[in-house]
Length: 256
Length: 256
Image (cartoon, rainbow over all chains, first blue to last red; front, side, top):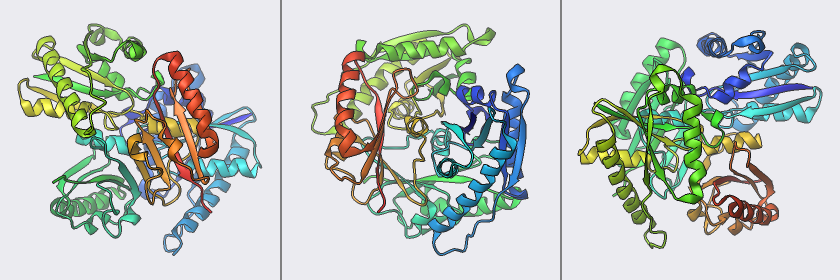
């Protein structure tokens, strides 16, 4: 039976790859890559480098890449959830075709996911959709990775939580009206709009990072009202220079 | 100058160790271990096994362990935060003594942390306290790891978040009155009391795991009102058998 592995390769540094992921990489016949367009070509290249660096020996030498183009996503749609579901649905069709046409009956395919596959990534949902449709039969498994959550805090050398306190993780779009009510520790992901500029509370610190764990890494920390504007500028410059940016941050309200 | 590394070794499976952690392990002269008493001796043993398995070559063969006993923590104290701070404070004194007495002036020491050092673990705070006291000078760094958060979702093969939704991570004690208000996706850590039994909402599913990534791994999922009692029983039996249990879980409210 076919097998598909969703492998978390860590958030940025190729050395974030785990031993479990390396063992899994070495069993793979076909890596499925989704090309997001020229701006993010480095990310395709980084995935190839991870394979080259960590696949060795007789079992692992015989692998290949199958690449498809990411479907367009309607970013103007009023219903965000529906637009994402539609995009997942079209991605699922692409993966279904790649698995059916490119993977032998007893072959092992893999999708490499940045960070960890469970955290604001659609791949698990896509695979669930494929198994529900049932057009192509396969077993599947998930290999966890070091997420940007943990890369961010490690690089800032801070705990994610304070003693006894909860942590809130949210997409940037839910921050459009400032800190979520009642939350003092908020991690923000998928924020293309610098939503932290909506936070005007002088008692909130930001711990921000981009390109975490890579040679392009950027880190900023301090009161969000003070360093926020610096981040906006540095982020825009980096995005201009590289063509893409992946960032995440923690907002923490100081205690009295 | 002395250097102290806080190394996340992943949550359970020794193969969750990253390449970065392995490289760091191979630079270490002294591993500082805190013995939590006989019940958790396996955890000390597992740390030694990780070192044996991953340290090799000329640079890495010359390491040793320094072990101290964990200070008693006042679990009856009314003020939870103060009791934890006091415990951290006494742990800090132990680490300060170990670093000063056991680590050469240019030596590298390390503390191995389960999962990731930023997530409900006090080691970063302890090291911050030591550097603030300034009695012993050292550089320090944090190596991120695969946390139980990601091990849990990988083993259940589920995303942590639903599309566009936030995630709430909380210590078990804050769950004493049921699901936190307004939260539909709640990860619970440090829950010694099976706080999920307080959740009576029939629309909430639980995804529970213990000894994640190890041969003793236990997984349960389903409506919390149905599988909750099974978890309570299985957890008690496992704890009785092994002498300790480490578990975590996600509570998710089903959508209408």
